Image (cartoon, rainbow, N blue to C red; front, side, top):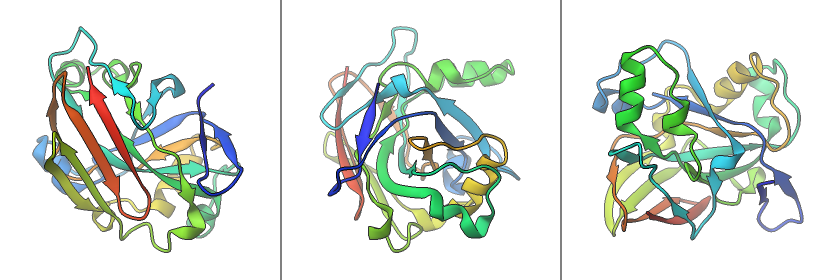
Length: 218
């Protein structure tokens, strides 16, 4: 079972379901030719897709175009079912760094045929995920700088202030559909600048005051 700790504490959580937001930054939606959605667009990754800092993400043989997407991750610390926007952040126990690895060619083929994307998003090693800093140490999660570099070249440089749906609204929306349980993770979307990686590349993802990931590609 995959687990992550709250840094500086003795608390550890087994990772449950990983619920992700698509198109939650307008510029990212534009760069992929997608419309800005009227409501949050959700998909999921299994816990088996999680790897950690220093690990290797492996591009499946069935894809020729794998993309990185740096994201702020939320760790749920207490059960949340149909919570209000006002109370939503009470259920976040930590903040972390994630990279939503995406097989863009496979995703585009599936979308064109009206089919689900899971094999493009949930394959083994598709979710690099850091440990989490305590939620109380992040005064405002909507002012965080997200960066991702490939082989030392900065590719993504954004801010969580550009989220279309903010964290309280995200949690309230999701919890009205799925009961959130301790250990569940929410990936909150990625800013513009996504692109392709190839075997041999090194990715470095960083969110100020939250954490860092260094991931190799094979």
